[in-house]
Image (cartoon, rainbow, N blue to C red; front, side):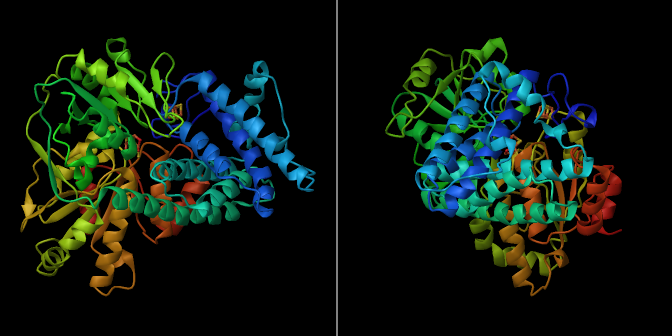
Length: 544
Ligand code: FSO
Ligand code: SF4
């Protein structure tokens, strides 16, 4: 195997024997082969589109497939074997449909023609992985784009679950998949394609924002309990709000409470979920602490998306997956023919469990997505004009288990008191319990929501640009010190670059998949930088 898609890639180079994330080498190879299969489908589907023969189920197959290969989503090799077989069948059925409509395909790439028996998948996978592209710069750019569309697929998946789809996004994803096989493209072509991915990144986050806010209302300032009650509970993690809604509906009146974990915390900010009195609070912290927190939670846990880590035996039998998440030996819940998920088994399981052990108490405040912040716009603008707020720091993205991430807690603590942190994603857990105070009633940490709600932060920045009558978003007193871990952060980054944001600092380390030359392009054209130490970085950001 060779995988370098996340921030924890072994030695900052890549995982070769087993993933630091726990992904086994055979699963990693099957993921590579699934991606290759998706490229083949994209090639034939491009023709289907041209002839008005594209079906929405093909778009969803590609979106699900990409999402399932994101870090910490699916570790189950049988899942990938099944998806590859399904993908090959789908590809052939599209060809058959084309031919029935008089369209003959010729000169197709191997990705669109190969067939193998399951026993030969592993061999085939060896020739189609990341290292199949020999030139390290082209490889770097192809992977940058691939990881970007993986992130895009994740957001498109959640939007689709709420009935919001955009065929243009799927068409772009397919175009990008095909481009990664095109040896006639130059490094410059791929840089342009990466920026185009950023445009669709903005679109997909806007689509998901519309899906979430039109279904569940606009997030509003909310205090979230981080202690526990005395009833048995179900812990729900990941990012899918539709799953949460169904779970809340089905647990109502059962005596079982529902708690959020990790990236599900922002669900509390939506008006639609406030009506559930058994929606008890948020339990624990970011994804990487789940091995301890799932243990002490005592009740069943539902993982709707990443970040899942290989479960310990102490809670493996209490763990359930749904959607594209999977782990061998862990129960999986799929939607029935009516599209609804039946969580009865989890609810009955919860009733047999003890209430959660309290690991924290008190409250945290969040809900500062674009609508809420814009409602406070006058207050915010005044605070900037009078100098009460000197600078905003966008510290969105992901948390991770490496010690180097303590930087972000220190950074938040050491920031001058006249600065405000705008956050989104699980990165917030490094500083959302610090009590950093407020500025004229505006909290110093404004949590917009999940990683996709970084879109909200961009909307806020664009609004401030307009209010202050500035030409360029980079003239605002906003600095970007972003923490990344997996591929959703890649699409967020590309989206910010597309919006013209310069001088983004990315940490705790720059991606292993950026070759020195590609990193140079990003530094020279976009001012992308890494991080050093808290003291020097704060001086640099504050301009002194
Ligand atoms: Fe975190 Fe994991 Fe949301 Fe990521 S839970 S690390 S950017 O998957 O998706 O922020
Ligand atoms: Fe390694 Fe990250 Fe790939 Fe897992 S996802 S194998 S940790 S690079």
